[in-house]
Amino acid sequence: MKKLFIFLLVFTLSFGCKKSVLELDNPNRITEETFWKTETDVNSAFAATYSLLRNVDGGFWGVRGIELANGRGDDFYIRNDVADLYRLSTFTNTTDNGVTSNLWNTCYRGIFRANQILENVGEVPMDAAKMKEYVAEATFLRGLNYYILAINFGDVPLVLAVPKTTQEYFRAKSPEAEVWTQIIADFTAAAADLPSSYPSQWIGRATKGASLGFLGKAYLFTKDWANAEATLRQVTAMSYQLMPNYEDNFLATRKNNAESVFEIQLADVGGTDPWAGEVANQALGVTTAQEFAPSEVGGWFEVGPTDKLFNEFQKEKTVDNDFDPRMYATLIWDYPGATFYRKPFSSFKLSFGFKSLFKKYQNYMQENELSGASGASNFTSSNNERALRYADVLLMLAEALTMQGNTASAYPFVQQIRTRAKLAALTPGLTQEQLMAEIRHQRMIEFARENQRFYDLKRWGLLAQEIANSDKVGKQFFVPGKHDYFPIPQNEINTNQLIVQRPNW
Image 1: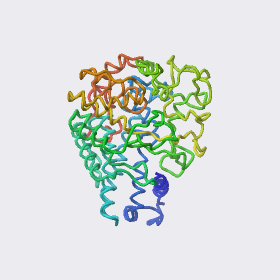
Image 2: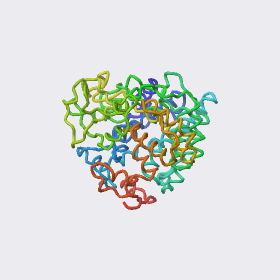
Image 3: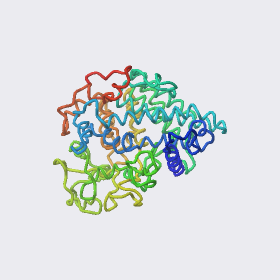
Image 4: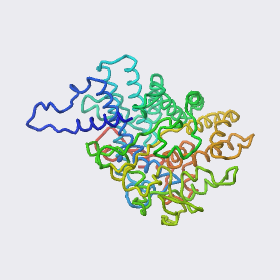
């Protein structure tokens, strides 16, 4: 991925140039006529498109994206420091919320860039096989951005080509079912031509496994269990495997490991300002770990786990009568010998009376989160966000089988998750509902803080029940049907006469 980082810097520097009103032709300014000439140009465009996935303001795997994706769940709280985030977490947000607007805008920027690649890559001289890969990769990225929009906003405009006129910029919403149809089409097309792997310098680019994994997830959201099963079985036939040590999935030193199906690449390189935007001073890490860290180590302590999550981990001990190793990797709490950022746990003050702090994805082996791992940037982390892990593939496949009544075939996939967690063998003979309850339990503790819980509850139809049955701050304000999705951003309503607001907003 190093080359993609370099391309990103070059791309943003080039497009950051401003044309003077007195200059009719600036030879240093990149235009469509001068840009789409070589594969280097194509890879620069890809780097700029991938970069939006970890954009600090609106990327789904950037700091604000992690906060808004997890913040509404029954396992997560956000304190009242950043007002827009707190309102989202407590279901008191309005249509002009800046964080959700940034997510919407960033996804459509990603779609625009993917469409640009699709429309221009054919003009660049290259091998036909490589051309097919690039088309597949851009199609995957478009599908991924629409996936993010669908799970968060539902009905959204479908833009499948670069607008040529002002009128084409304004589109009416398509029903969510049509959006999912397009997502499935994009992931299906991408999977057909994407490679299974890349040379080391391109690690992190979308692969066949990533496209099939997200395609399987799309089938789960649309309750197409048979196609979900068929798709996810293909991923199990690939080279992915669970890491023996669960925590290896969340350490900066264990990035892009055998369990990683798709990973958002981060690095403590570039400029010194992670919030600079797409200019030369932008750092290519994110500030998520620093914002989540306690104040005692330079963090903003913006979020934390609810006690519902803390208690869920303790429903079952390991075969050695210890806590689930995933609990040790995900949370830090008051147990004998507990240390965090080289300090005893007793050094830290807990917020709002909850019993634990998030350890997952934190750079807790450092003394603090004030600088990146290399010290090159302020507050940035080089720890990649794992957007899709093989554990997710296994549990999705188990769910697809269980929902078809084929519980016997689902057992081995659930058992792989339990075996790594050092839990006893799954009780034989569980009914469909009993096995689904086990899958729901495993997903809650396996994927805590990984942009999964709220969306899992929504597709299971359990949002209202589980939020009510929690210690989440603001749970009394949750309105079923309304807070299942974000509202369409008010700025979009104001500028696009063809679009209407979601019901209840």
